[in-house]
Length: 124
Image 1 (cartoon, rainbow, N blue to C red):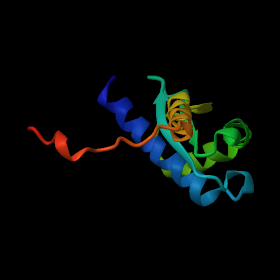
Image 2 (cartoon, rainbow, N blue to C red):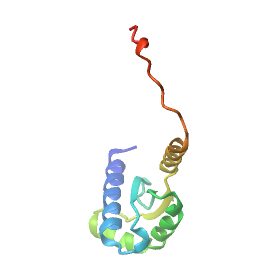
Image 3 (cartoon, rainbow, N blue to C red):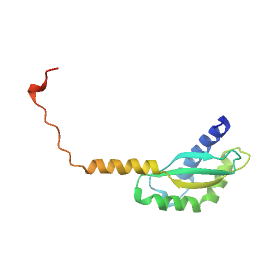
């Protein structure tokens, strides 16, 4: 990936986080929402933004709200970045974060007894 595209991805990601956290007043976005990755196409016309939400049950609602607000987000993004085109943004669920949360939940629910230490095992 070229340095130009990497810089664009980084800048768009920072701006999207800023817009979602500080400029959108939608109560459905009060949950902890983060943009984990941004991938813009080389022609800067399309952009895929991966969304991660702390509550697994709200992920689809949050992505739906963000997708419906895409016009507003693009206008705000145009004010913040200097790019040849402001890309059409497609918000998708970050499945890696959801998988990590699910694994953590499974591990928390396991009933693993604590190991007992014996005084006579110090033969190192």
